[in-house]
Length: 330
Image (tube, rainbow, N blue to C red; front, side):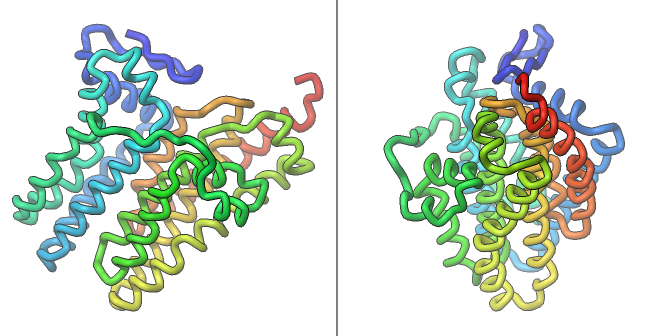
């Protein structure tokens, strides 16, 4: 069957069960986004994530419940913010089952890490994941977070849109990360969920007229967007990371690398958006690339991979934007 999402065409072989359509589509996106060695590195990163979770739980079994809660909240946040609910339910048979399989694959490394550590009770809580597609989705309506949105620079409309569509859940996630910064791992999961929401907001492309009014040229636009988003992300993560380091001083290096990884991830999402910029379009296919970068960004020692991905998109973003800044016939 053929699956079309916002102009992106994904081809899924007809004999495949309809419930596997999202997993097949994610695999196709992954193959197009990464060369073979990138897929191998991603597989190694997943194995490293399982090993890291196993080590954290093995050192202190009390970490397991916090990891589970963080994982559940992260996937629930992804389910709430995905923009293709209506499309999937209308055009994909067994859409909720397909989403359940997608979430199960996403949470598999966490489940394996807990099982290898012998945490059978905590890992059983993750069985709630396949039920999430049947849970209600909050619909954005009315004006939300007006005071907070006034504090965001005008050119960062993506952040304003994020507040409009996810408030008050985004604020509650941040407050929970700050309130539970004395616990290990959990605040990192919550910060990661917020960062993924931020990267998701970067998928929406503004009209060309709005882009031209934001900056005089491509360099200025990218500079304001990238550094503006980094400043916003620093304001979000710094209080949580400082609090977590106060309570877990031995993990200062882990918190520092995690914070840097989220900054690189957000900057990469901005550059990827403008490298593929199309006026008034939603670049849903970028989600696969960002998901790959996120896996590397949150693992200590692998920050260099998303950094290389970021640097490789700088030139692409400039060249793509130049066609819109200088092609007056468009």
